[in-house]
Structure formats: C-alpha cells, structure tokens
Length: 156
Image 1 (spheres, rainbow, N blue to C red):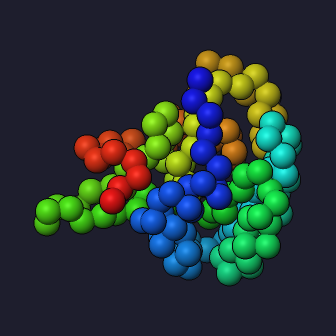
Image 2 (spheres, helix red, strand yellow):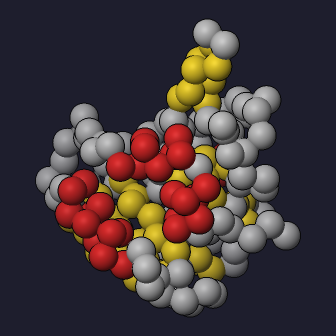
C-alpha cells in the first residue's frame, strides 16, 4: 500500500507544485460559508483537525505556521474544484506528474492516496467498496480523471 506523501515533502521535492501552492487561489464560485478548510494532521495516523476560513491567505498562513511541526496538511476548497498544475514541455501543455500511487484531489488541491474506508473521519460511515481521498473523503469516482503525465515525478 502506498504511503501518502506529506505536504512538507511535496513542497520540498516538487518545485512546480510549490510555486502553484504559493500562488493565491481564486474562488470563482461564491456561497455564504467560508470557502477554505485547513486540514492538519498533528502526528502520523492521528486524527485530522480542521478549521474553516474565508481567505486563502489565512489558510496559507496556517500552513506556514504549522509546517515545521505538523505531520501533514491540506488547504481544501469547499466551494470549487481545482485542476492540477499545468506545465509546458517541448511546446506541449500537460498536467504535472503525480507521485507514484497518488491521484489528484480537486478539493484538497494536492496529490493524495485514495483508499477504502468503512468510516471516514471527515464524513462518517461510507460504502467500503468506494475509493476515497484519505484527507477529505470525496469519492474518487466523483472526481475528474486527469491524464497521467508521461514524465516522472517530480517534474524537472
């Protein structure tokens, strides 16, 4: 079974993702509740704490403050889905490659491992036959299937 890459490692090893993550994300779908949710896992295999905020800047600041100590994190979008970063190679645009065993979660805005759960911490009891994001619990089947990059991760 693939072990999920931590945000700290992702930002350190993948320059393309790091630049994309640092750029403020723009929400184009508006609703009354806070559109951003910061998920923080303090220790490996521990529970995921979460807090909502109205601005990406506040969520990003939360990541910066917790990055040295937290086991893993995600800035999750409750309002809209985000495609993976796009790179240009030899004049062709393609999606940035994912680490082995990971797929893009459009809501967590990062590569994640999808697994089967009987009960997911973020959403409660679920169908154990469905693959779900280990962070937010969205069904893999509900997400857009992006073509795999022919490049190996991390992109150079």
